[in-house]
Image (tube, rainbow, N blue to C red; front, side, top):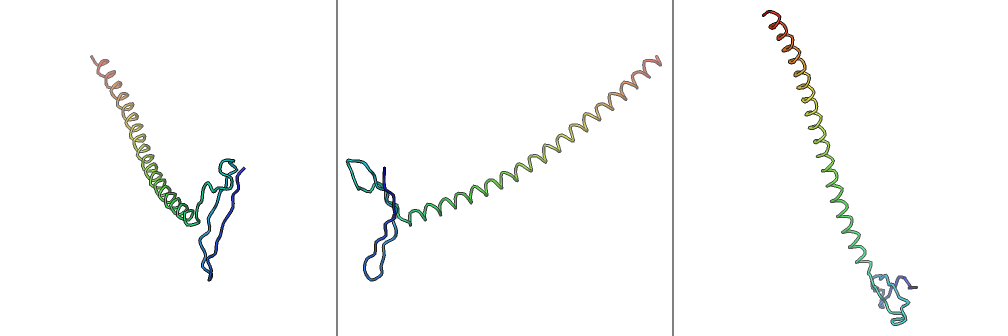
Length: 107
């Protein structure tokens, strides 16, 4: 198993080095050797970058939802027009059938 911990060093007169996250390994070839060292500055930069990416994704989702709502409105409009055309076609075929019946019965 490895060792994980924080390391903070001071350099006289109150000056201090930033914290580091140190992950140690239990590898017999490198006992006690730090495998990964990550400063809090690096962690801060990654968190800040992630926040920017999440914000950009949130904006993209809002934009997509707005486009989706507009798409739904267009579909509903097309469906209404389709049903109106079907209704008008039904009425027109009924009128044409009645007119044809009157015409053929007159001759």
